[in-house]
Image (cartoon, rainbow, N blue to C red):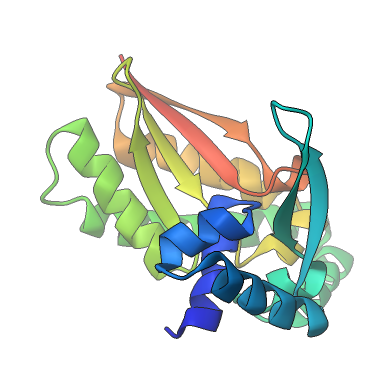
Length: 206
């Protein structure tokens, strides 16, 4: 991944960044980082917002435009939305529920295979993160001071389908709970469909 692509990737996975923050992450000068940002802005991939810092001086933070987000995989969004509409039209909501259940069953089988050799909860979450990343979700895990874990998904490759049919999101939440096991609870605390830049699940040992 070249420096230009890394710039977009870091903003996608870390959220809005200043030129100084990106310079440190990319080992560039501030001027070099600004050149990367302005080049992407000219292509319509980035924009910026002025945010006052603690001293009251505005700080320019760069973020992805819709076109910038669209550079990342979307799993053929238009076709997916059309198929969902057609299934609903031909077979009703019951037919769509069956379709989602079938997809969920396949995903569950794949995820259980990833978790097969994982024992402790952190190992299981790490294995699930690896599986989700393979599916295009740009997933990562964070450990909190209270022992809970955050499963963070910086991208949703089925976002168009999820907007069209939110059962996909409810299905995934239930799926995580089942594959991680009964010794933990899983809840969603950030959701792209509610305007967040990412989806975040908090996983607590019971």
